Image 1 (spheres, one colour):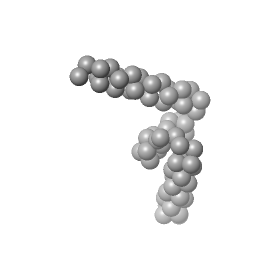
Image 2 (cartoon, one colour):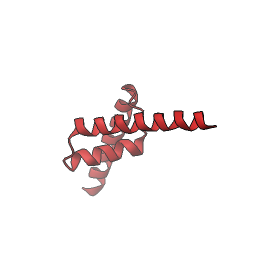
Image 3 (cartoon, helix red, strand yellow):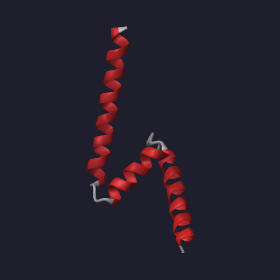
Length: 70
């Protein structure tokens, strides 16, 4: 029983990773797993997507600043 749940969870995660790739989300499997766990814990998916987008914008901005300082 436990083995079948683990296998189902693994298959579901593999499917989510493939969907993520098809949608070009840029999320690696670990980040995607964290997002799934947050959604399962009740985090609003739209709010989570907004946070991820904002973090990417901030990271890009910091990279641009870092390159400009060199």
